[in-house]
Length: 241
Image (spheres, rainbow, N blue to C red):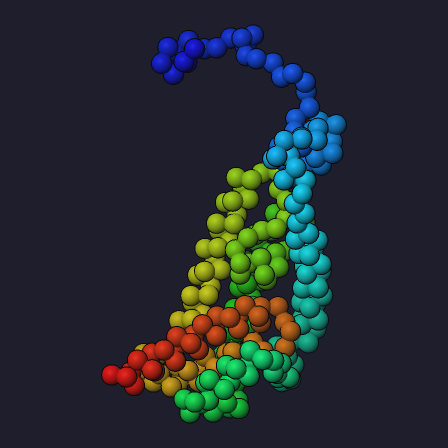
């Protein structure tokens, strides 16, 4: 019987009944244990695939979130001035590779980090913290996303409302994309500065991001690094012409 065409509703008594109340374990919502009496262990391929996948991401994010909150508390006690006064650079392989590449363009590699770059970094971390706190699915006031979740654009926490979760993730991606774009624009500087000066600013931002393990530093570094390479590309194209 086709209700949209005929306009005649199907009688509830005519609807086929389930053979038994329990449902297959693969259909259980993510916030409900599949071992509940309401679900049975499906022996079909989809059931075996469901049980064969183990994603420890939630535990990993919970550990990262606890570490992140401790870092935020420590940074709050130190203050930005104390943090900026101790630029203990982490000269890993990536840092040294970028350093070797940038110095080919005559940049002062050890120049003092400009106050403008420190201000940009401070605003970035403050806005990112606000984004992480306002997009958590948990009702707890202290709950917040990790920096990694915000930058990747996902939420690992389980939810019984998948539609709401998708809506929050979409908002999260819009906010972080806008934040990253605004930082890139600030690192470009005014229209009247040279490409070399732009590269110097981007390099200073990258150096600052490598100075200390602090909330927002890693993602700020990736934004700065993107600006470093984009500016180098502009310089090379200008030299070629």
